[in-house]
Length: 362
Image (tube, rainbow, N blue to C red; front, side, top):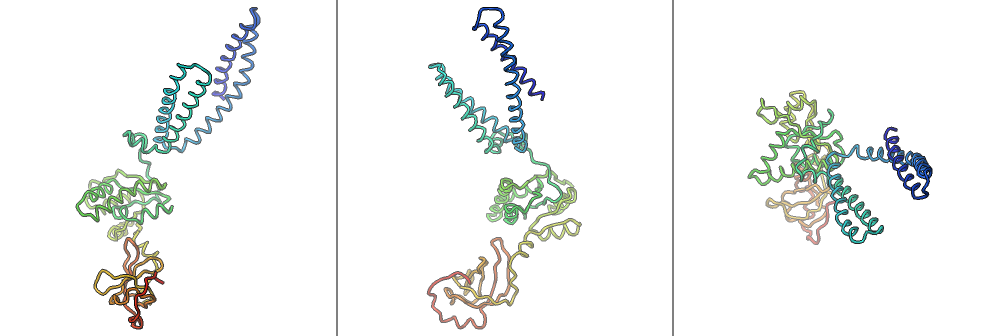
């Protein structure tokens, strides 16, 4: 109410001044200006209260809309909106100086408003990039506080693996991620290393941090360095105990060490293996062999879910459909499950078939 009353006060003052001027123009007597001032003050008192309440409600709604908006985006939107407003005035003022007509005033005001609105929306949409380009990320977009205890503390093996990004994109990381700074430094060192495979996976891991943030996953980079410990695995377990977090890893050694320290750990690779279809050795499958394998006399087919089946001594059956095979072993990879198999005893019935066409696995 204080805002409304102060706004009404200024409105009444403006109405009184306008009424006084109108009274001077209406008559030359003493009473006309006083009557005009009183009428102007009375009318503006009523109108000012209505306008003040509407404006107060609008400001409250604006605060509610901006309350969850990151400060960096608010800053960027304010800067770009001010730039758009100044640009609109710069374009419109020369025309006002030349023509000085009410239409030009309205046109210049509309142009300034459109450019200011465009600048605000552009700044709100690109706030993170604008703040980063201005070098103000640490001030206006500092890392958020660590998420609650159900967040996942990840190491380099998890950060460089695609499983983490798949979980985040699917909305299965509601508690967010905590990445220790020494893990980020370790991945950066690997990204600059000479090994092309490790370097590519490390760069993908660094990019996944921003990708997860854009997907709505809270990612906090923890500054804990643990200088008294040299081993990266021990560092990770120590930080996990300090913060009371679970560990997400793709390393069985880290998972074992966490278990020895009574720290909860999630082995992402083992979890993925548990979710894959179980094909025990000795299981009989029927597949279509569609191409030659990497090793001599190998043929390759695929299961309906896309998993690869490598069959030994089956090169002569490439292009044949419905070949019975027996599973020898399985091996999980980043691309899925690979099954190694041999021809079933009755697969000799297919040896005389000509590879007329290639079909998908059945």
